[in-house]
Image (cartoon, rainbow over all chains, first blue to last red; front, side):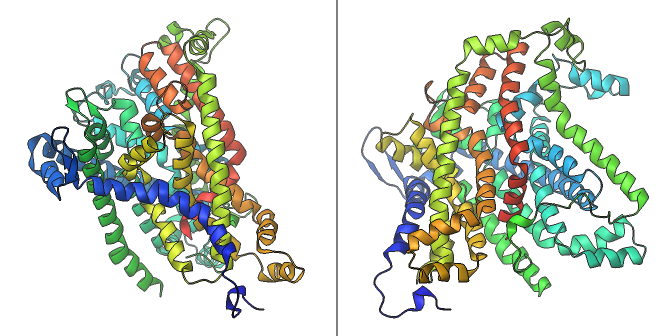
Length: 310
Length: 294
């Protein structure tokens, strides 16, 4: 068996270039180059219709140092962290629970799995509006669900109160996206060899013991990957907040996250004109946050997990 | 992480015929939990669909009642049909999604073939370069993408969206397909080479063999493309190029108080995706589980 590449004195392998060129070209021109050019743009600016020039980190200084930009930026970062924490506390543990229940190989598991994943395939815009309707006190769905349970006190405009809007949006996002961690955990769980379950059954282990002693230790790497995916997805989120609360991420910016802030900075809103240089700087901050998160994961969690596996 | 030799696409969840791994009482509890969560997952959507067929009075007075002959109405659908170009938006979404999927599958399978088949100096580096895009969201390049599309005169054309979604889909598709192509027996390709087949011909021979993987890549790439709001909003907001999601978003904002119309528009946007999902759910599941865990 010989590998073609090992042959000596062969002509230049044009076919390799032909195979790689379309994907590498489109990816480079439409994704990598724009990201780099955005970063480059974030280091440039112009004075009142003058020519564009290099300003170093001045845009970032403005972003972090002037009240006009710094206050919304920190607000968005704080909200984004809350948004992420809601997902880590609600979405991933419940997703894991559902995956474990599905891994018990009950009758009808495939049906449950299909139903539980349905919200994930729907457009965020649709989900957002559907929940906006359901939570709208004018419709009264919420009221007719809560009244029989004597929980009238909970009949509040959850999306309209500054104190609860972000949490409510986070939970809507959890409701929609729970299928993804569920499937990823399930994929890891079904790889666990049957013999381990057999042995556990012989020892008379119940569901909890099986989870604690067998399933959880074996799917730890997936827990890490799911956390990273959640992190990247959350710090890049936009659609849900935009479609429910609009570009101003109301009430009073209580649900503003980096994605909506980026959109407003870039395109402008009401009294503030759009600014592509500052928009690029916001994207630069987002990139920095996401890369920091990825790096933290790679050097801490990933390395420790590999050590455990060995 | 994966058992060696296991093709990622083969993970499709537990088969229903297998024996449950836990005792009777745990099984009952698990069923109760799963039923509750399934209801929570599906009821809001069903509520929307159900009420879209009712007159306004009963939408408000009995939101949980099924439509009856006396409350049944298609008023909302009528408003949608007469006041929005939903047919055009739907066609736009279809063109963008099918176009991007075609380009993703074609370019990614070619690249994956090169990466899995040939040993050349830049092989690992190219693979790494392409996989940056799995973790770094393309959205962060929006300012640059808009400038690029303005420069190419592609703003407010469907091509702008097709190119962006292709670039967005390539990294994961190459990643998944490369691992699948490595699983194709080498003897097969050697035999073809001995018979005088050229490299392009061999690529053509491999494609049908990895059909499940191509299906998985298609299914997993499809959903984010069809559902995206960000890029249509920025690159193609014109009335002629609106996608269904952007069109629905604009319509919903405009008709926010006409519950019949809003519910009908929501239903129209939900039903096709759910049908597609049910048809492709096997490929989708294997795409997600195989792709992300390798």
